Length: 67
Ligand code: SF4
Image 1: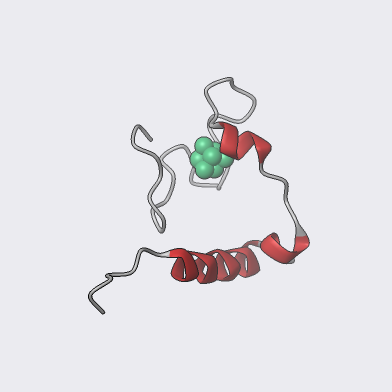
Image 2: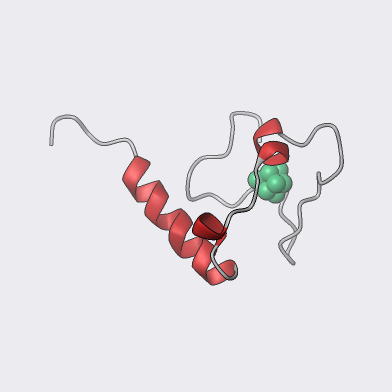
């Protein structure tokens, strides 16, 4: 994604069966290539991983400083 992938937005490189179209290709972003799966982040499967990811996105979301 040219300007980076915003939080909460599905990556345009993700196929319908949740595979990366860029896997193994040099144009795959380095942040993706360097990511190491870990139990505390990924849990036991997709549902647990999405719950953990949603929690992290909420914790790191930009907050309006006027509130
Ligand atoms: S590994 Fe990176 S490029 Fe591939 S689908 Fe996931 S976020 Fe997109």
